Image 1 (cartoon, one colour):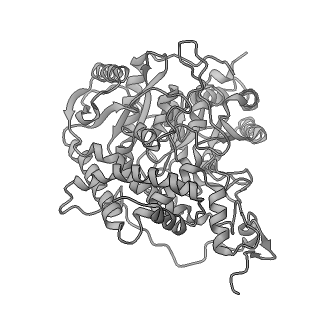
Image 2: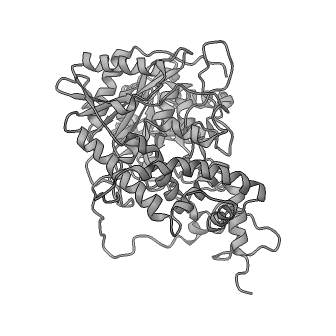
Image 3: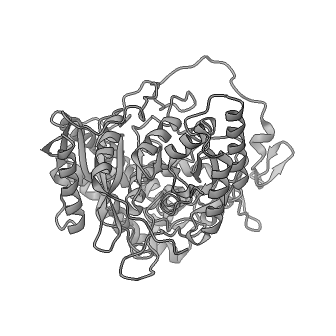
Length: 95
Length: 494
């Protein structure tokens, strides 16, 4: 499988990364180089093999359904690039 | 007067405990070395006051007759991937520049609790993506090593934990934290002639460590010898309920268990690692390593890990896939950089922020990851890679029927020059060919110095062990260390 410039622009959109025309052109070659190389995985016979989900066998723990933290509003907001009062500020999203 | 830069973790801890010197004297000496070595660009932020503060607390505890921790009085470097409360943490990215965590990662908190102090935050490849420290937003880290032909060409300290490796080799700190996703502790350790161990996945908590590829990321220590690695790993490891993949197991007494007598141990030599056209120096070092382990009483057996050649391509699907998901959090809203072009809406702000904040390699990997996870391609790429990963783990399982440890080179070459490999992302990826399989299988693996190349540069031997058997890995590392006679050091040119 290989990607063209339209696909690269689509991936960039899905990734929420703005790219210029020149960057898209460059990325076509780079992504195709990498994709052609990973293509060799297709030759491995994986009949009956389950995809790995946990590298070291471990069971997911459950904890008591209780509040264990909270009351840290200012800490949560401390690094916000545009804090507005006790909220994260964002550009207008509804016209 | 003691040259504190020559002391390792054990020597500092023991000297402080015995009252031979004060922890503050060590911290002052190393603070001065850090600040005089700016040419290496190993640190993003220096925190001399933190080192002094921790040392004063240790000296006060000792004066009061209180028990001292495992790392009491030892100043260390902290890779900038670990969140440190009140101290900027960036993962060497622009998108996190100015981010000051309001909490402390579990691993760093464990180290401070053990009496260690922080000299500063170490430079690294951006978001731990890279093998040469050329992807940092804060500039390349330079290895203290130079080739023996009189050239002053700047060499890569390896990556991603290249600030850590450079600082330790330059004796700015006796030890530092590293993280290893696909070789990021072992390869930089090999490049600068120090030791480093990636423990079993789950030994060290990932809580508070900036995420790259969560199923692979694992913290570990880097230091100048095996004992120091054992001490520091004990201080770092342990169960943490805040990390769902943390192993709920006691931390073994690795230092006390060190024993370089390998009688009864079988060492596997994987034939697939003997690549066509393997570097002559690397092949010779590997043979020396085999002889040293034999001398230590081990039996050498040939083994096969048939899916080895598929480890790197599988890794370069799985790691970017996980990264594309983990790095979705950088949105310009909650923390870090925001780039809001005039009149832009929310979506444009996301795209502009991420374009401005992520470096080229990070953007490339996010896009690869997004592609392999996208509708229509998920099974062909991601599911297939996870199946191959299961086969790679099975290769190791099968190997353990005939051996207890595996010996291989850490990297296929000595350190390369900065700029030599970054034209083609693939040629950089191939540098992790020997390191990635153990990462995919979650196994403990260590690099120790194995000798010098013809150019006078360090080479590393890698020991891979069974899950949870860090002790055997450390012991084999120690056996190599005792026989390799590796005493070479980088000249102090900076």
